[in-house]
Image (cartoon, rainbow, N blue to C red; front, top):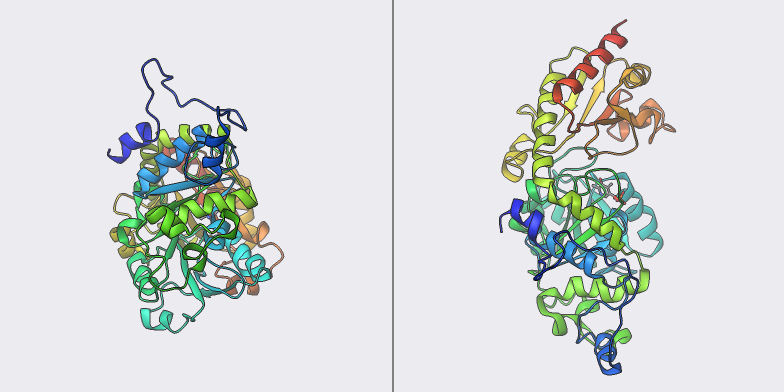
Length: 424
Ligand SMILES: *Cc1c(COP(=O)(O)O)cnc(C)c1O
């Protein structure tokens, strides 16, 4: 199936007289007619859903759809994007291990990796993703277990050179994990460029309507967990399943099966059946939406670039952008809806610009059908001085604009009147 077809049909096929729409199995549990069958479930030799924390037919259908879209062997839905990022690492790293992570990542991931994983004994080195392979290689340690980056970084809007990062990871016998939230599998399929594991916050474009939190981990099935001897959690016996070895029992699906039957069992950050149903509604129209977001955002970016009040703009779809060449390679159909730009005159003028907008709403969110905007200097980064802001790569006048699916002329009219208001 091509992506547009898979978005509608993959993962669920009604039988004769079956429901056309994906049914919601709003049940925590399932019944069986023999103790022998239930025993097989606990031995992992039977695969039916038996308890919704570990599996549910509605959630399962959506996982199959997302795995098909990314070209993976399996997927695991989670309660949020944060849970997906956390489990993606904990599935292969433990106290004493080390991760390399791009410094151009989502703030929540930065805190999770830099503070919380550190407390668990996993050290993370944040790297400049634009550095050369030689420079990056020098940062790899014997205990490094993964390389992590975002296809299009939120909010830096850098574009990851996935092939370079895959080469770095593979030459050291470790996997590349890519957060593909902003691109979605419609604009980029990181597995096609060598990534091994993909995570998403489905809260963003995949849901697309700002109704349901969620995340997902997708396994390419291509990484050889046994080759380097660095992943005993996958290759050595698991005491909590009487000595089962994931690579031996599940082959190419070893990573995603372990994430489910071990980590989801123990940590419980699962998606709900109703949440998966809402996510599925979003996925059905994802190709139409993400292409239109990209189109609207490019129109807005081209307008903003010409404005005398705009100090600089970051949008990889712009021909003048530093990441345009990488975007042409990895995101030939468009670069999604998020733009950042800096308004001349600093904090106060940027705040007045935002306060003057009428259609574009002020929100701590991005990547859904509504246009919205945020000013880091008065919101997420308000404790920082102007000098500290600049050190984080954020100017006092920087705003993050998520271009929605309204008529682009209405979005432009709103931006124009806000520029007129700050010119007074
Ligand atoms: C929002 C976001 C996350 C975190 O997802 P939640 O669903 O909010 O937990 C992770 N990565 C990226 C790129 C994001 O934009």
